[in-house]
Image 1 (tube, rainbow, N blue to C red):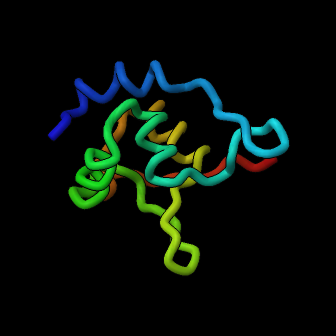
Image 2: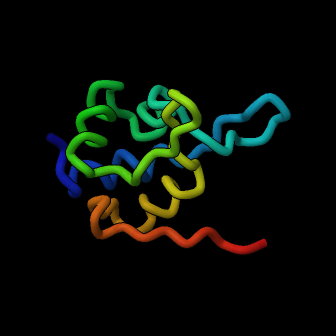
Length: 92
């Protein structure tokens, strides 16, 4: 399992936005998108999620997604465990 010290440099390198259909970054990330952003395998994303090491995903029907802005803020906060993470979206 990756620990916090191992995740921070990986996450810092993964800040480049991936354009969506309209040239904007996507609002929600699939597990594959998240794996690419964190530069880890899909299996590692699944393990981190099961261990409570990622922010809670959003489910839409059976689809599981993570909020791109929350992942960015979570990385900037040092990747705390889910039970210690509270996210307040910025108001526009």
